[in-house]
Length: 253
Image 1 (cartoon, one colour):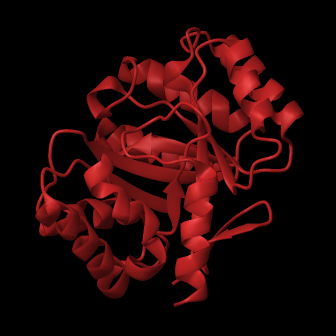
Image 2 (image 1 turned 30 degrees about the vertical axis):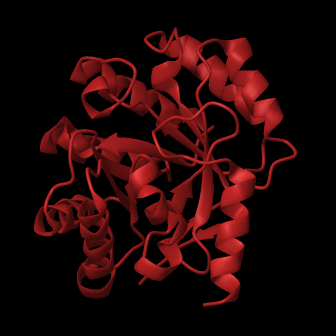
């Protein structure tokens, strides 16, 4: 399986890498969160721009990206606009969504963008082509905040992302019982052992699914999300705690 490299970070080998989301609603709030990351042990930063109050203003978004880069220039940065239908804060029409991501890709500030699988095959293909033009990685995602689909469906979505050109296929699902968490873990293991030729990112959300955020090195998820203060999704834990658990699992593998 090939790895994905962002700056000096290699995703898809060794311990799962830790991504910390930034979820401020104003420029000052965003920069305060980024400043707080200076002394934190993490691997990747994600700006969840759907939280930003001026996200529909492309110039304002570009300014924020530049400011983030000024504070922490060395870490890989993922840009994400999470649509309300997939658990995010707001909606954009698909035309504006595409325009936003294209501007971000061309800005030179980001290492990867999140592209939602269900935005439409034509739109996804257009964004993948644009990302390659600017040497920006694509995290292609699907989020289900209501339920956990069956194992075959989870694998099928990840395979479709791979076929559409995702560098990092990603799926997050909501469990209602322990069996749902096992479904996600089994699907992850099946994907990486039978179909994947690149790293994948999977998680079962909420407290019930926490184990999936900790055991990526066992089951095959290459990136996990942790919080520093405000969380961006249910089930995230503090980055220091997550790092300790990942270290223990890695050293005893």
